[in-house]
Amino acid sequence: MISSGLNLSIGSAITGLFLMNYRPLLKMTEYFFYYVRWFP
Image (tube, rainbow, N blue to C red; front, side, top):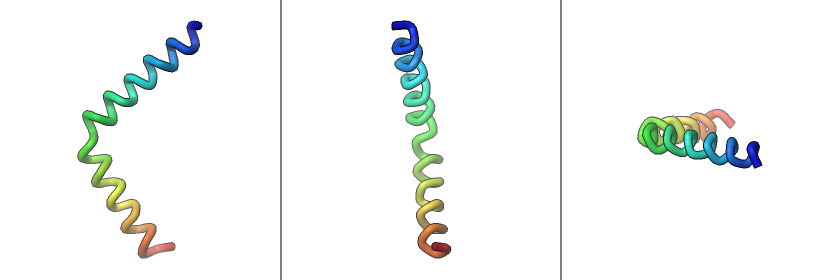
């Protein structure tokens, strides 16, 4: 009971951070795939 509630709140916090940092994460993902493509 307690652990599931804790996981839910942690998930909400991570989701909030992800949405706040959506643009930088998108940029980082673009660079990541760019480097993976050129340096397999």
